[in-house]
Length: 266
Image 1 (cartoon, rainbow, N blue to C red):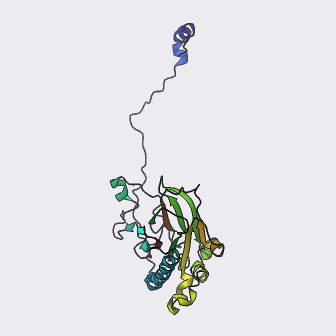
Image 2 (cartoon, one colour; image 1 turned 60 degrees about the vertical axis):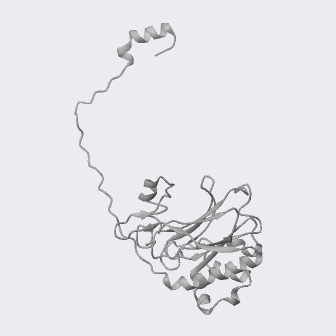
Image 3 (cartoon, rainbow, N blue to C red; image 1 turned 90 degrees about the horizontal axis):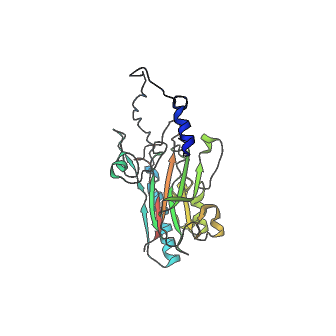
């Protein structure tokens, strides 16, 4: 209705012309509901053969980081959102449990094997963080894998390093393939590895997150400046392994090996 008194009186005098009324003549309308989604069991890809090599790789890099920084260093497996293979219910970082607990739910959990999460803490100068894991794109466990670097203040993404499965996508995009051997050679550690690890290195990856990346590690290092991540903002890292080839979801998260996060222990 107009605010002007004269215009308002004129509007009210023509009220029937200014008001349009819709009436529903039927009490109920027919509809067809979407069917209730059914859980599809995720496919298992056994990676247990790589476990010993992944541990050896992690231990070598942990020792190297401790030697170069002169500080105590620890390596921890990333947390994982586990799936009950019988019911399909998820626990931990995704799914019904995080909804009930009121925590932040990570999305697209059916597209990935599971979210793997590693808390780093503060990223200081001359204290790089190293991540080791299995390159799931090379054993047909994933179409694409991604390591995401996050600020834990607001949980926003800063950068990432990734790898596509060339046999599935038709293109080779990313820097994780070949990274484990490249990083070991850059650190002059390659000659210290066992023959078993040398044989399996192509199936593993290594990524570095640092305030300043060394030139020899440029392809395998995520450099994070203080504008992207202020010095007093803690850092977190996630791994996603997207869509098991031949299926419509990620692989069974209980079978894939979790990455390790190697960092100075403060």
